[in-house]
Amino acid sequence: MGTHLLLLEVIKMILDFRSLTLVARPLTREQGQRILERDHFVCQYCGLDGKTSFENALIMSVDFLHPRAHKGRKHPRNLVACCRPCNTIKGRHIFKTFDEAKAYVLTCRNELRKSWESQMARLHGDTAKV
Image (cartoon, rainbow, N blue to C red; front, side, top):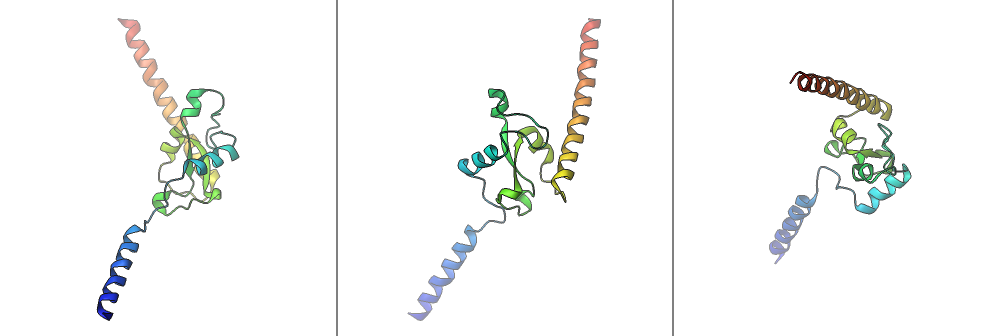
């Protein structure tokens, strides 16, 4: 009987271990809503206001400053309101400070905007020649 109980304990430990994850679980809707409300539905990177239009509201999310993929916690200090484009740009990068992350995101957005404007100018130039 003692061996049977020991085996059950080992199985229980294995099952408990398998349920642990190396990354924080995603936020619940309520947790995300609290962060968005705290930050007034404004992207903390680019300043997009999620309250000005339905389209803006659709792209608002919450970013883990220290990414979940790198064991970032669901603590409010680690979470900011963020539009999905800025969240995608920041990705899984790790920064020492929020200001460093914001500078990186804004620099990338500016580079992407310049590239897009250049492509659009070429497209418009090509269509004007037709």
